[in-house]
Image (tube, rainbow, N blue to C red):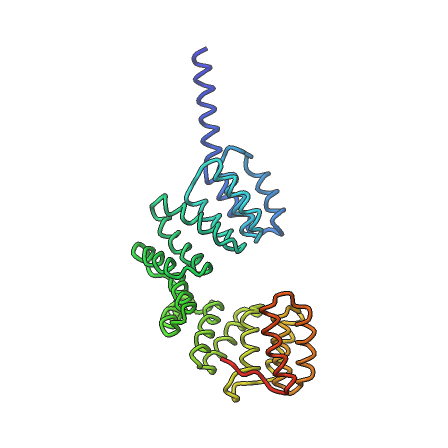
Length: 319
C-alpha cells in the first residue's frame, strides 16, 4: 500500500514538473510565429502541448503567440492568466510590452515597476522600458532617472540612445538629442524610425535640407511610414525657405495619405499642398468641409487659421 502511495506521489510530481517545464510551452510557441494567422498558431500550439490550466508557462506561451501576431489584447489576457498562476518578472515585462503596443501606458508602467521590484537582470531591462513609457506620459525627469539606472548595469544600446534622443527632443534640447540619435543610427543604420526622429530634429533647428534627406530615407526604408510621409509633405508645402518647397511632391505624398485615410490631419496636408501649387480655391474647399465636420474644437480652430490664409490667397510657411 505504501509503495503504491509513493508511486502515485512520484507520478504527480513528474506530471507537475512536465506541466511547469518552460521548454515544453515557450519553445513550442516560438516555433509557431510564422503560420498563416494567430488562430492557426494557437490551434497547433494546443494540439502540440498538453493543456495545463495550472501552468503559468502554458498561458505565457499563448501570450507569446498572440503578441507575435499583433493581437495585443489577447496577449494581455493570456499573460494575466499566467501571472495569476505565478507572479514572474519576465511575464510582467511581456505584458508591459503588450500594453505599450495598445497605448495603455499607465498599465505598462505598473508592469515594468513590478519587474523592477523583483531585482536581477530583468530590473535593468524594465528601467529602460519604463523610461520609454514615461516619455509617452510626459514624465521626462522620471524617464531620465530610469535610463541612468539602466545604463549603470547594461551596455550602452541603440534603444537607450533612442530613448534619450526622444526625451531631449520633447524637452526641446535638440542639439543634445541629435548626439544620441546619431549614435543610435550608427548602431542600427536601417531603422526608419531613427531617420524620422533625426529629420524632425533637423527641421526644428531649421536645417531643411538635412531634414528632407532623412524624411526621404525613412520613407524609402519603410514605404508605409505615414507619419514620415505626412511630415515630408508639410515640409514641401510649407517650408519658409522657398527653394525647399515643392508643390508636386507635396501633392503626391498628401494624396497618398488622404486616399489611405481621409482624416482631418491628412486633409490639412492635402490642402497645404494644393495651396503651394496655387490652387487656393481647392485648398479652401477641402479645409472648410473638413473643419465643419471636425468635432475636436482645438483642431477645428487650427484648420480655420489655415482656411483664412487660403481664402486670402496666402500659403502657410512655418518651421
